[in-house]
Structures are given as C-alpha cells and as structure tokens.
Image (cartoon, rainbow, N blue to C red):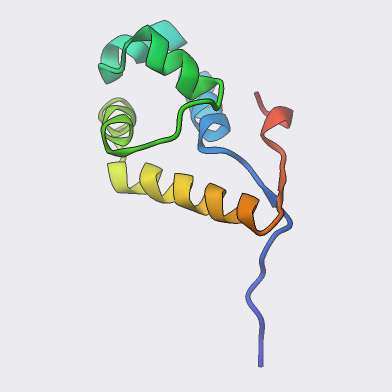
Length: 94
C-alpha cells in the first residue's frame, strides 16, 4: 500500500500571488485597480492578512486569468496544512 506524499511545509496563497505579480512586473497598486479589490484589501491580501474568499478569489482570477476556484482551493489547502502542523515557508518568498 502506498501513502501519498504530504509535505511538512506550506506556502500561503498570498506568497504565491506576490511571486506571480512580481513575475508579471505588476505593482500592488496596479493589481488593486485591476482586481477591483481596492488598496486596503489588496495590502491585506499581499501581506497574508486577508483570507481568500469568493469576492477576493474573483478579483485575483480577473487579473491573472485563472479561476476563482483555484484560489479558493489554494486557501483551503493552506489552512489544512497549517492545521496539521506544517511549517509556513511563505516568508522565504515575500
């Protein structure tokens, strides 16, 4: 019987988003406008202080041309990893 690989580390959706914006050369201010999330919510999101819910996921998806479901899933995977005691390595990327 094989066991699935379950890492003992995790990375927040915020860190993934920061890396993606950096790769695209997009500022937080530009993202705030294009996503329609506004500067305060965007700042919280990029700092990892705002959880990704439906409206936030829709804003990210609008800008990055992904699905909102993908970002909602990323938040759930992150939450589950933290709950099982995984180390958050997001700081290595932010």
